[in-house]
Image 1: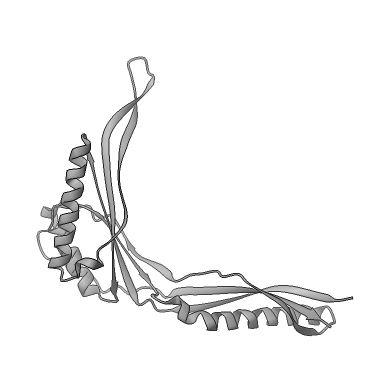
Image 2: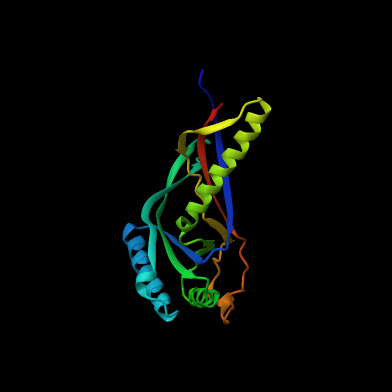
Length: 218
């Protein structure tokens, strides 16, 4: 009778991030649709000017999402009934800028934003630009981990480990770590002076892979 054991091997690598991603979310509520569109156009133009003044190529400013939606709220009327009330048109535009590990450039962008008329939410995250370059080592380590676990079970069962019967690759992914996540929605007059971007020290990114290996028991 042919006996086997299936073991999922896991592997992790701790890697220093090499890229910064700035996310900039601009939104506004307007009573008229045309007013929302006008604000959208103004915000786009102003963000483009911000990038230029920060000495970043305009092509580096990417859109994650864009939209204008009707917004409603519910209020109690004189009979204490919940009535839906139209509040206006909500414009939302999420921008993204990716940089190397360059906090000075990120600081220039932030300075230009806070001096503008925009009051966006700003987030910052660190990531590894090419996690695939670590994939071979991770997969080797995952198979080794599977073999190690299988050998322990084989020894406990008073058998020996044979050849590999099958392998199923079950990627676990990874490659990103959150840095600063805040709401920098402040009026420009509160940041009239130049601000310096702090030299943040990000934690390492945890990359991981997993492989299911079926081993022969002899």
